[in-house]
Amino acid sequence: MSTTKRKAYYEEAYPPMPTKTTMFWRKNIFFQAYRFFVLNIKIIRIVVHGHS
Image 1 (cartoon, rainbow, N blue to C red):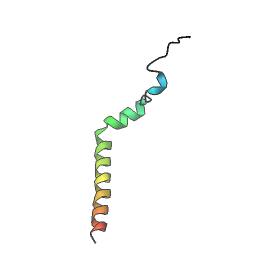
Image 2 (cartoon, rainbow, N blue to C red; image 1 turned 135 degrees about the vertical axis):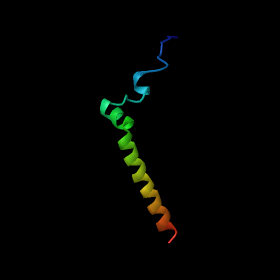
Image 3 (cartoon, helix red, strand yellow; image 1 turned 180 degrees about the horizontal axis):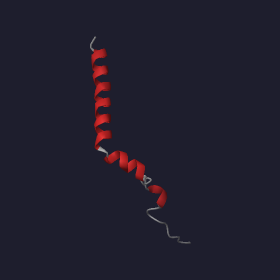
């Protein structure tokens, strides 16, 4: 009976690290505010059209 060691955690099991550009957009308050308003407008449109 042969025993082989196996890694419990390997590189492919972890998600990829975000790039510098991705981190910039995630931290940018103006971009976050813009996305917030766009999302709210989409939700409002769904609610208004669903109740008419």
